[in-house]
Length: 299
Image (cartoon, rainbow, N blue to C red; front, top):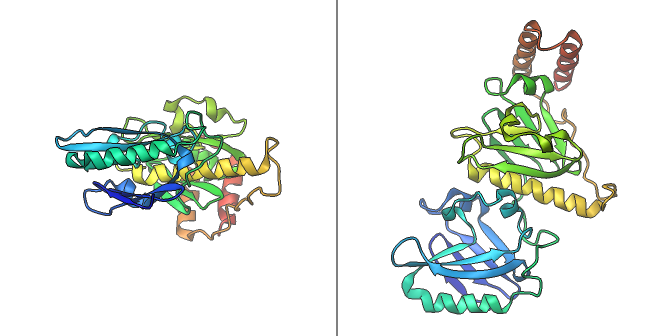
């Protein structure tokens, strides 16, 4: 098509094989759009297109409907994104209805034969690593192959302190569970292959070393959702490259927890906290010695 349709917060460029959505960086633009910057949606990823009146008088909405499983961002969001933060929703003035209807027809004309079926693989790229954000009880980071949770002394539960900082290779994961920070008890949980965390109740995320919990101002959508989507994309790529058995030459290498030298003052503080847990009877002598040795090894 080769044309551009500009609306509120974004513009859609219709390429030969995809629609390219470029987001504005204005003050009123949702912060999630700032982070995403651009989304390239192949026509084969589309399930349909909708043209409806906008919530505000004098506006209309052109929305691309993606096939289930085509986009790691929507898959991770699991229907929890607010309407205003939907990256595939273009708000236009009502007087541009004729033009919008034309492009809606053009998009419907390029829908593939599988438009009515879930996608077998991600067709839209995941946000790029490295990504990180602060949760209430720890810092979550993803470097492209390993997810790391580093617990905060003031927020993490004793169960998480006892388990220590966590590092998860994407080849050991089967997915993510993201509960929006816009609702009560939001969290990001990593779903490990064959692990009991998949069966844990949402209220137990604060006790699960494979999860970080959100709170007011922590794990906000535009920070936590892109990381969740990036992890999900990497997990899917690793699974596709290794096959059902989960073993193959394309498996990503694990990043050792001690690969980056830690701050000695931080290590001392964490050992001091372990000592308090030991004095309170929450750690055995052996557990205290092992955790202390692990922390010293990071120096």
